[in-house]
Image 1: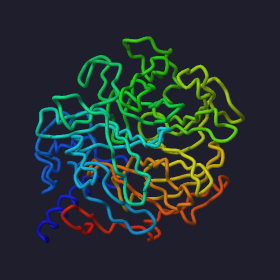
Image 2: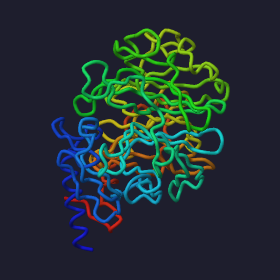
Image 3: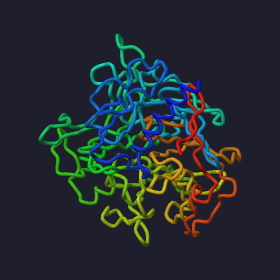
Length: 459
């Protein structure tokens, strides 16, 4: 076991060095990496996890995901303090056995929402399966379903939209892009289509997704457009309504879409929040630019008009306007992959996102005025994290724990987490940023719990 642990430690130490010091910015642009170990990635880091030939192929993702620093692995971070990693949701080491059940060995994000019928739906981004197969079984996105209401002991996945026979045990891509040209095409390339937010409205599921045109410097990318897809069969099949497309560039699409607006730049990634009380007829949508360095703006729309861009109103400094150009930031700073929901324990809305300092939350009573930041995981403790998304059933019945998922570049799989919110209640008007618990000494990375034993964190 000591020899095995040394091998894991070496692989993880190399991944940590490659990841560098920044959260959500990962590796230098010259490092290819990739969840199948391409570009000299950590092809041996899977150990004896039974993942077949994972990590052995050069694969199709070398150009599509330029910042991933290691092959998929099941190394669970062990943190001190109020925030803990509970288990892997996907990939090696996951009790959900996503490799054998769904051919999902590496993936990210895991955007969650309540489907309104007793389940949580979970949308993932770029996904790989068996790296020994040509193309790595790559998909732009997949979807999982869960009715697991016992959040404290992990998150069990029930099922997923699957490929039809003769393909077996394969979660298929559920949302397709509108552009046929792939990477390398001279005109209108579309690398991938990635979900950014989901919500249920009167039995119909909606997902806002972005079309990635290019991967730019680390932490940044350019989108062609974003679109809103809907599903009337609980996520089994999806249709993108062309009327909901927000063009970011003057690209040619095979369908008629609304005219290009320069302010569409601010609405390429989304977080949805159902209204409460007097606002229960509204769906609120936060919008951010593509990449990881934009501010968040806010819109609202009557539920029945969610597919009608003309019915959206945008938050201004003084009220609401139907003109998208009037929208002002409501959450400032670098807001990356935003998740927002009502929190019964704090009795406030919570916004979760990452920036260069780590995984942050803010609190609000009205979705408009937001508190200062509180750091759940500092970049000093876990430098490769990104994409924190909250479980929609968190903190019910007085539970003090906030359950969420996040991804790290150096294992390229989704981790199930919890944070103890006791003592963290603050007013929306309290705009002071709280210190990073890694800086105060409350939080540190002790090591990694792997399927083969505990590994101390490299010094």
